[in-house]
Length: 289
Length: 197
Image 1 (cartoon, rainbow over the protein chains, first blue to last red):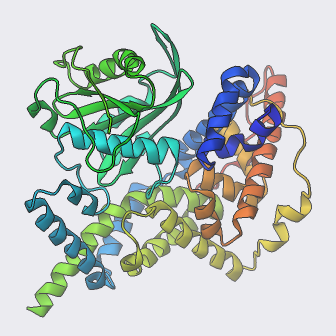
Image 2: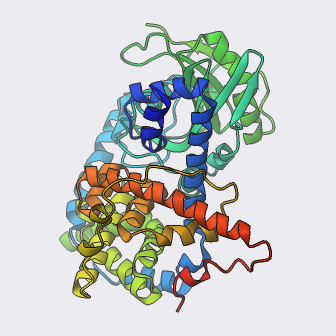
Image 3: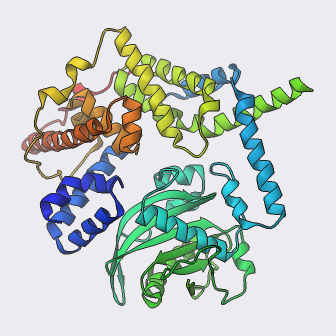
């Protein structure tokens, strides 16, 4: 892929509309081409400026009076088709309840929409993180489109706001530098993540923040996330678990490389989340068949 | 008994609607106001959109992109209003007027103020503004934007390409004018502001 090719599809790249293979070709190109990297940054900056300007323009905001009038007006209108809507939701809730009672973890996939994250031990967290990394960062085949972190912080989890600025766009480790290429929130199954995608040593790395509902603390030190279902050869997960949130790194990098990166990006982030988090909580686990 | 069940179902649906749809009201309003350029009309458009969404809520698939679904409803309402007012967009479709994309894309200015960015966006043909707002601001995919605007996905991509290029050309020109006014009053964009009634 040459400079002309990259610029032709640069906006589609920023919109995550390209095939994984094309994404990788672009990332490889901009690793060695400062000119195209600058151009991509410029387009990203313009898009961000446009979004911010539009969303905060005072003259484009609805009045409080209109908001109230709209809400009150809608309450006067009966919900047509409500019973048809309610039936599948209830069926799913019932099905999820039955399956959870039976102890099958796969029931989380039956939850509707963006329900609160289910309580999950680290192996489930790792499985969901791997699933999100593969579907979002590598293949971009999500059921639900990613949403901006600001929106996700307002709607799902205020902790995601931290990811707007952390980790920084350029990260130095002892072994090299990592660069952030994307920040958003996405979902895998019933689990909502704050997702930062990075390039490190030529590989794609996902940093995923998610609520763990305290379950991670109940697992003993040294517990190794393992995969439920089919094996994922060569993928590593490094998890830093706090009382309420876990910060996971997922990549096909060597485990030691990922662990090094974790010290620089995950641990400071987790420390922001809770002051009491010990800096050496990073647990390394390589998933193997 | 049956009546009680129906009431409970209605209550569930309403709670789901308020949780899923109402948070998008402000976004819908901004889009509506940008397109119709009048607060009273924008309020009508948002109200009609919400009413339509409420009536069709049983058709909404949980887990799909609610924002895209609502934007499609809003766009159809805006489009119907334009037709009713005799303002057909066909004559102002830029695809025919701008047969070829702008060949040179100037650099993005270092300083991008809100006024500069929005004022420049407003200078573009409506069809370019629409796709840029839906794809770059509202984060709709090309496919979702195509559905919302009822145009082929190839047209969305083509308009985006040309629209973004023209936006940069206009931004560079506006930035040059502002830079030339060392003692200017920065009022170049004011005449483009949306009517505030």
